[in-house]
Length: 102
Image 1 (spheres, helix red, strand yellow):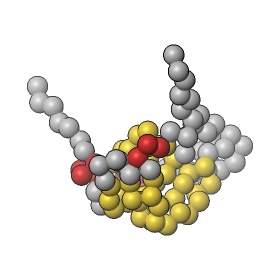
Image 2 (spheres, helix red, strand yellow):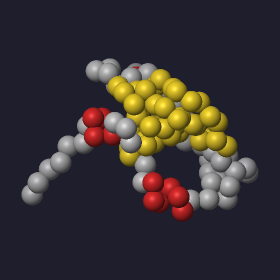
Image 3 (tube, helix red, strand yellow):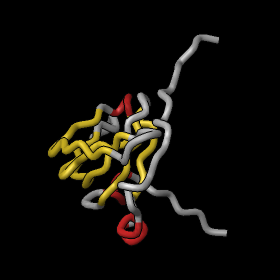
Image 4 (cartoon, one colour):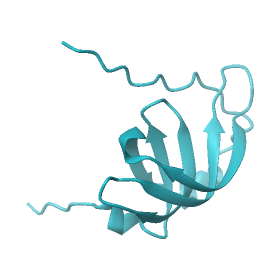
């Protein structure tokens, strides 16, 4: 069995989707990052989900995401993305991560 590790280097210059710890969804081209997982996205937009409206796309241009706010980074499937109709999609927003002291 072979294991394959994916790093942020593998996503550089590719379109990625970033879920933040406060529940935001950002889509853009990963242009750079540092050892703290701070991300630089170009051609970035935020997808704002609603239960009663189409997905709103908020243009952010060049955007820096602080590493401590990054929950998930994944490569966007361009082919699958082209088939989506965000005008028809509805969804409750992603809930933020709540940190508690146990």
